Length: 175
Image: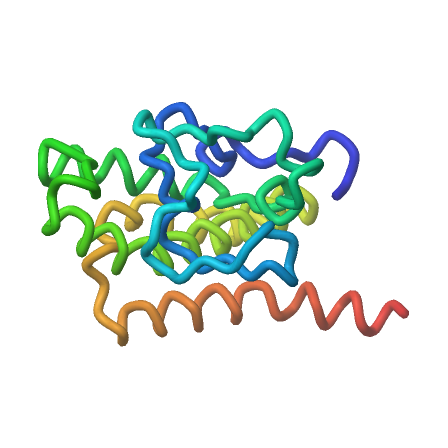
């Protein structure tokens, strides 16, 4: 990353306001630094009732380098807040309808947050206002992200790819 360029706060994970979605929704693969295999949509055995990690201080020593390296880019807290807004709760343990919604929406939100991060960083580094405009449009749309159709998801992916493609082409031609 270019010195001085950082992701905005909304694109940085804040586990204190998340319902531990990354500890439940994605699968864990021991061969990728997660200590043990865990199926998707299953809580990690080290997850405590308060949605905090019971071994957080010793993740690396216990073989969970993957947890240390993972970054949801703010998807977890954004989706937790949307669940509270929609259901008055983000309780995936006690409310099956909330769990279904969160589990379905998380991969889509994580992908959208990644697009937003790429656009934001590219705008900051390149100074291209069009990239920041698209980032702002995407950010404004993210409250609807859990309800996007497959076509809407593909359309956003195409827009982001098209906006970033000239930067990749410029980089390739300068090498």
